[in-house]
Length: 254
Image (cartoon, rainbow, N blue to C red; front, side):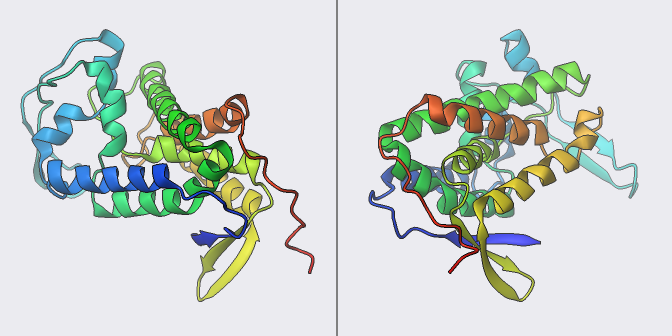
């Protein structure tokens, strides 16, 4: 298991204000509006529901009591709530909500490590537009894959993972040889970004096979991860860069 804990920031010249703001907004929404994830009504009102995006209508459902096929236990599944804004706005609001504390912390760790370098290279305004646009495109990838694969169109999706996947795709394009510090078992090593990010993407594809094959893979929208990564990889150059990344020597050499 490779857990990124930092990267080489010695050449960073800009303070990543936008990246810090995005992290702060995600934390604020989770604590203040989602009440640490316990406010299910708020979450189900502002999360992206594929069926709503495809039809352009707000769908409200009743709370159901379901039985877990593995444990036999009964649990309550809250119904979809009224969305006070246009359902298409949920493509944006869902990017700042999370399903739990672990979900939030994992996403913010990756955004903190990789987002600042992308902002440093692209500039503040281009970075925020890139982040939001790719996040929306990642959500649309999930919506349309859900439709094409015949999955449940009423299951909400939320989280910054799609946008952060785009950040990783852009990072791989702009900084493939940058050293990333990772925690491997009991050791900390520095390896090239193309290995760390590349392995992360392969992991998403492999774990998304269940989803791509028509089954839901652990409640994770892997299509959004894959779509976000691809859009980020492609679009980062189209946005242009205000600061070209310097030529770097391979970290395999001293």
